[in-house]
Length: 96
Image (cartoon, rainbow, N blue to C red; front, top):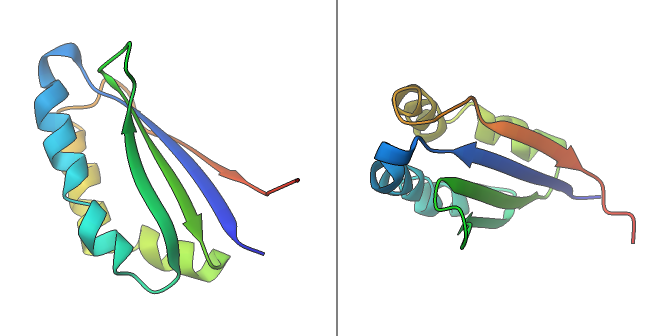
C-alpha cells in the first residue's frame, strides 16, 4: 500500500515569493527519487501564504529515504527564516 503525505507550509506575508521559489527547488529532484509516485505543490487561491505539498510514495521506506535527502534538508534549513511556523506534515492511508 502506498503512503500519502500532505504537508502544509505557511509563509510569512513578506516572504511569499521567496518561499514559493525555495519550495519549487524540491520539485524536480523529489520527482526523480525512487518511489515517488506523486509530488505536487499547491498555493491557496485566497491565502497566498498557504502552500501545500500533496505526495504519494510507493512505501514507507521510499518516504524515509526522501526525508534524508540533501535537497529536503536544505529547504528545511532555509525555510526557518521564511516560514511563519514549522511545516505541518501528516501521513494518510487511503480508505476508499
